[in-house]
Image (cartoon, rainbow, N blue to C red):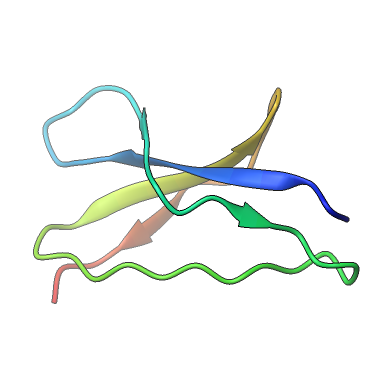
Length: 61
């Protein structure tokens, strides 16, 4: 609760994740919202200090 998570994005052909914009604060219920529209399929993780989420894949529109 109250912690700030940062999105890390990996585009096709890249080997690592890079920090994105749009940091979010986790609510008291443990939730946050984030969205992105993309023309490429990307993988994303959210990180806080040494904690990483599972990788999510966002398909191209």
